[in-house]
Length: 121
Image 1: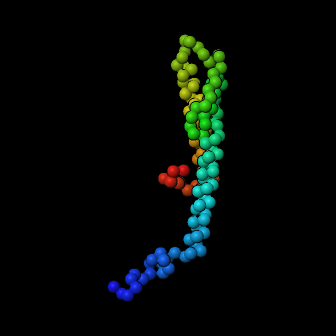
Image 2: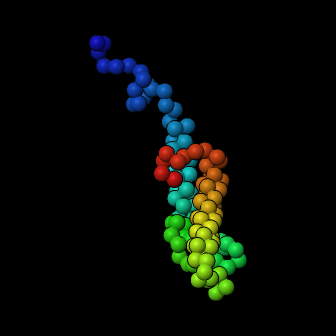
């Protein structure tokens, strides 16, 4: 081996990284990460509401938890409990879809459509 060890290709000075471009990219990535974390926090604090049949209203948090459920008295028919159950499920599922859609839209605006799902966002 030549005196002085390996030449070129190192991260120390002779490599292919340009200091200014690399630093700028890192700053942009850090800013995007901060923006994404802020957006994620805002979305988790929001609530999403949906109604089914005009008689059942469900509210879910941005964390996907059911926080409120209201049922109009006319929805309660002891002869048709299954209909009430189906209506509740429909309202909760629609509220969850709204939450997921809001999260996807918010993150899509930040990432310009890049799929970063593998990064935990």
